[in-house]
Image 1 (cartoon, rainbow, N blue to C red):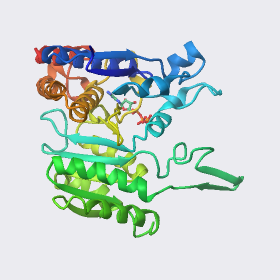
Image 2 (image 1 turned 120 degrees about the vertical axis):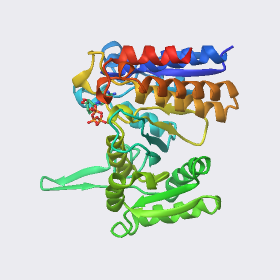
Image 3 (image 1 turned 135 degrees about the horizontal axis):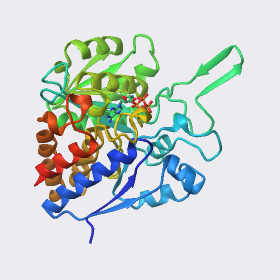
Image 4 (image 1 turned 90 degrees about the horizontal axis):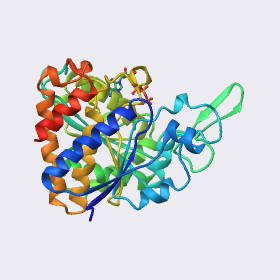
Length: 355
Ligand code: ATP
């Protein structure tokens, strides 16, 4: 009897290499700790368009709702041929399951080309509102053009959405160094960022043990480069978070080192790396599998906590140590992080380290 049922959606391009790597690694750790996982592969993206005529086949949402969580590989929707079935699935998945918090850690590892040796921070990005026009409205688009000379982009901020993401960030801060930084620009967006900040402070009243401070987004962008060690947990709105998490990845070896987990109020969560589908390196066996493996590890750890499964927490712990071991040797890490091997070599090294 499976203790966890997890959907596997490869996504596009390097997704077909790094998602299977993440499953293999997790299988090895699960076998070691006696955790039974039922993996359920499902079509999504370009492959689904070819086989089912749509990038998100009918029934996908209903089936995923019966699972504990799922892995979504990177989606290369920019390259989809134009047509009614060619939609970008990830905003729909985030919205449908109300996965309002995108948890994106940034951590340095020795000798892989990090700018600093001691970065350990988490940016929690609001996932379903903000400026992103394909997800901040339920119909139509948050961007429109009344005439050929004018475009209007709408930014959505709600008290409820802001409070929810703040609570998720406060929970994470509580489990870490008990410090939360709000990143915003309420000096200019007095109403939008103003509401976000007010809602965060309101949520923080329930977390008196967490110290909350705030930094204006442009100052934060500069301080993130100069002294990233001064931050622990950060919460911000959708687009600021999108940009800042790529900047943070640049500090610790690049996009291959940028994992993420999308969570909501229920247990169901989606492992989704920060990076895109990297078509330039797809099929070459060189993609760094770290971000996808670590995102999956975060999913297992999260499910271990919310489903009270100590074996899952152990699986996550073992995987973390094995990843660290593979990253410590140039021969068992990929070239983008000063290594000499490819996706297969790094994946095998992590599995060997699991034992
Ligand atoms: P999106 O807008 O969909 O997030 P993007 O513009 O951020 O995509 P990516 O596809 O994420 O672009 O990648 C940018 C470049 O970073 C890639 O072309 C690739 O060279 C590199 N890259 C991204 N992910 C990885 C990875 N896992 N391993 C190695 N290199 C990567």
